[in-house]
Length: 220
Image (cartoon, rainbow, N blue to C red; front, side, top):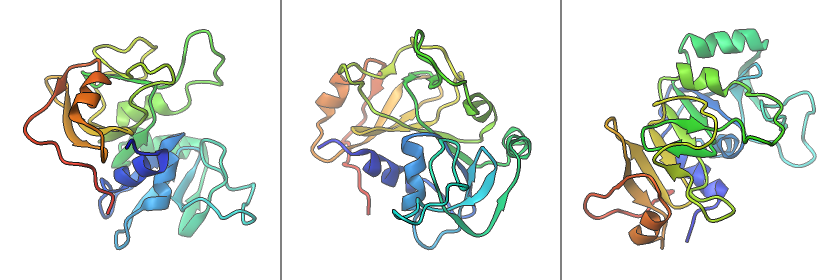
């Protein structure tokens, strides 16, 4: 059974370590804020100018003045700080962010990412993704393994305009957890419950590396 977007976010939250400063990109990554493991101290950064972002507000408790980079209403935690975007990108470019979690439209087996534009479709702009992929110490991608047409989004080479080159370390999809090896290739680490290795192979156009038994993803 393939994971939902919430379950993808929950699995990625297990990668966050105590003391991390973490940037959450638009889309699935924003959901990670709801699943920070108990007992660890993490500071979530939103690139529009916030340190100390909390989980999404309950219905009826939204504050329209508090939004993330995707224009969703959010909450702040005690000790949070709000500042301008110049300060925010100063933090990013100075590599003060330990982990960046981004969405993607395509990822190549070499770690290239395309996540900002589909030719022929109107976009508001590239946003901060290009700064993030150029500066982050570690990047995890949260994405769908296959698109709405049933085509793989994990490719030998990206077909869409690139956001960054050889910058992605790990991917979590509805089907699997994969590392991108330094020499290239998607190494299969975990599979979603009930999803076969064979189905993941069929759903991955890029080079897939399988070694030994592949365990199922666990969220607890």
